[in-house]
Length: 257
Ligand SMILES: O=C(O)CCC(=O)C(=O)O
Image (cartoon, rainbow, N blue to C red; front, side):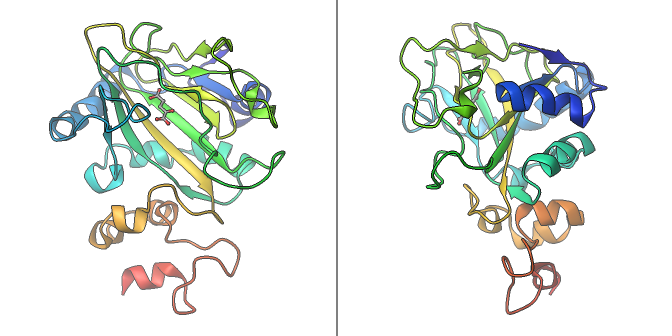
């Protein structure tokens, strides 16, 4: 698994991302920045239940509606490196399922899956989803670092088996893994005594339905106060001149009204 430095360019991220389906930039945030973002989620985690099924994880907490609850990730969500990668892969895009994921001790490995799985478009197809996993703890093989099946973004009918080899996104806190929606991956088992906290900022093509409905997840009053790029990513933007209009007007006008 190749690891890039925080000075990585868009092209340097794209190279492993397109070849393997994922790319890791180590230490994108300083330890202090990562710790501050982690601290920001602590009070939210105190109010967050564990999952309701094996996929969510019975020992895993998920902070849904992330952008209604914290401003700590706005800057990362709109960072030029992230948007530069998204520009090249998706072109037009929006948030799909931004969420905090804390995998607790005793959690088992999630089933390998694709984040673009919910979209019923035949493969091969262009990428519909790009995800970023921000490590707020050190991700290790023992505490649940995300598993990835290298190259599986090119699979058409093939599906992973129980013995399909995976690599784990072992990375220090403050690092980020970019991965395309077509690559098979899974949250890891946590065999330690401490939780593993990460945040996924997931984006889908601008012409698709968002996995989590951001118009309802983030109150209009909150969205109205955000920078324009954040508003567009939440969905208050247009894909070409047709998709996203409200009463024949740009949705940003409706948001301001
Ligand atoms: O938490 C992780 O490492 C990945 C989780 C994941 O892929 C998911 O919940 O869809």
